[in-house]
Amino acid sequence: MIQSKLNNIPDYNYFTFSMQNEFIASAKHQFEYYKQLAEKTFNQLSDDQLFWKYNEESNSVATIVKHMTGNMLSRWTDVFTTDGEKEWRMRDEEFENDLFTRADLLSKWEAGWNCLYKVLDYLTNEDFDRVIYIREQPLTVTAAINRQLAHYPYHVGQIVFIGKMCLDINWKTLSIPKRVK
Image 1: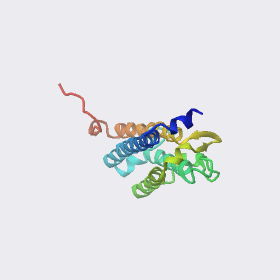
Image 2 (image 1 turned 60 degrees about the vertical axis):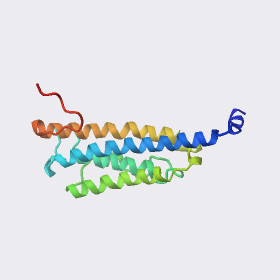
Image 3 (image 1 turned 135 degrees about the vertical axis):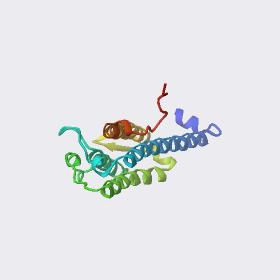
Image 4 (image 1 turned 120 degrees about the horizontal axis):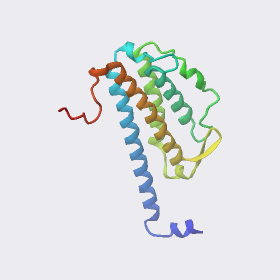
């Protein structure tokens, strides 16, 4: 009843459409920001450092990339017709590094992001009313995007931290540098 009354308010549908467009633009901006932070880290690291692990329980940059890619492909492939945790996804295997070159790493990286951006680029106003599932949990499109906006930056932070450990005093900051006294 409230929704039908809201639909009769002049400009309500335009306002809703505008807010959804603003949300997608903002989400894309945030995803791109974190993608670039990781890529600026990749660019500072040697090929060997991309595969370095602090210890056996830790992940390398390459392993984190492999996991993020697996997550992106699973979550965003056929997002409206299948659960975001695909049967073909082998999550545990994402933590066994089988990437061996920078080119392999970057190819995986781009495949995951391209899958995400393809969905974001083609969302329609009507898609915001649809329910999608991740691990059988129903989510709105907005909630699913927000979930990934928390997940991907978490792993990008790990990538940056590994970069800082590898490079020590040679690390070039990705944000505002500390004031030197």
